[in-house]
Length: 281
Length: 267
Image 1 (tube, each protein chain N blue to C red):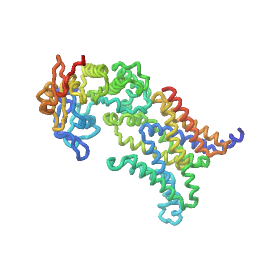
Image 2 (cartoon, each protein chain N blue to C red):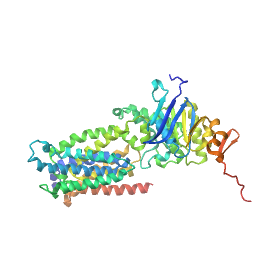
Image 3 (cartoon, helix red, strand yellow):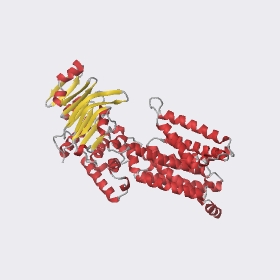
Image 4 (cartoon, each protein chain N blue to C red):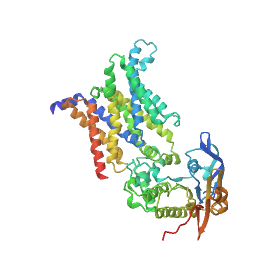
């Protein structure tokens, strides 16, 4: 116990950082599931990984660059958001009659995954960086990471809560929203931007596996448990927070990586929630 | 105050379609206030496309959709979609569904205002009481029967206090009793609130019995006029040849395919 408390003091950045990421992903995950855009979320996270991989590459090039451009490209977070927005533009544009959206998402996911591997293969730490991109290393979050996360997450949380009604309306009945004069394209854009920002920072700090896991699992469990609209985000955020805390605590004595442990806990909670849902039905 | 002599909605030379493909062309129709208009036609005739143009979802390729509201502004429209268009994935209660449009009519930053929220819930309760479903307000929408879900969608339309009620195939797939109850409710609401009603359906008989005017869309164009003029043997024979017959049963007009034969049960 004393050892755990000591470690909590040592890894408090990881504790609070991971908790914030998990809960914000839980909040947005509800809308991702209701809009049936889970694969857009997964593809976005892959594009964010490409951006981060490119920033690793830029670190090497920046040593020989006098213009300063590649210095800017070393910023993981900026590169992740830029790559996501590029990927999103490619995913959402195009002729449905030529290629379905699912096909374009699949192509984007495969191309982005390959690009991320190729970008980091010959960087200084190579496959180690790739592993970090995938599973993340939440324990090594620095104080600066935590500040950046707080500054980024606060407006995302505030806007997600303020716009929740509009997001639900658009997801539930798009035609009704349009008939009421709601600027659906604008709010869609805002939603994707919020999602893109939080995914970019999540993947930079905790990896693709954690980000995708917490985007889907707590929201899926919440859909099984919530009895009305108002409780849906609360269930999702609550399950995300509990999953992370349990995963964090359990991973310590078992000497397991924190991120995958937390995702596994979220998975177990989802199975229990789905069973409860089936029992109720 | 609105000028009651000005039509609520005028379609002037409207062409509808997708990309270069036109579904409807040269549509000139005026819809008076408090009118009850049925829009009928076979699949692919452009009923849904026209509906979307009126709702502002899909702008016309040519022509103009003009509103006769104050300063030419579009009035509040109560839109009742087909109940099966609603995704069952959402764990929404009946009152959640009724409250949804109000979130669009409030400013983003007042969404958490308690007084506004209480007022919205009051309005939702009034709408639910009017459709006779206050008792299921806290039940999950997806667990309700087809008729109840359709009435919840009508309550959702009423909560915005609309001037125009647009119903898209509201009785499709319903039994006779539920169909009758839904259409009786539409008629009662129209009388109480002086609503203009646009009822989209593929069922000519149903529309002939309820609507005062009919807009009949067909592959050669459209026919618009009073129900007696449009759903008449002369007009329908011109359109479908000998394929349909119009029979008056008391005050009701029934359209039946001519090939239908009434057979006696075997003895």
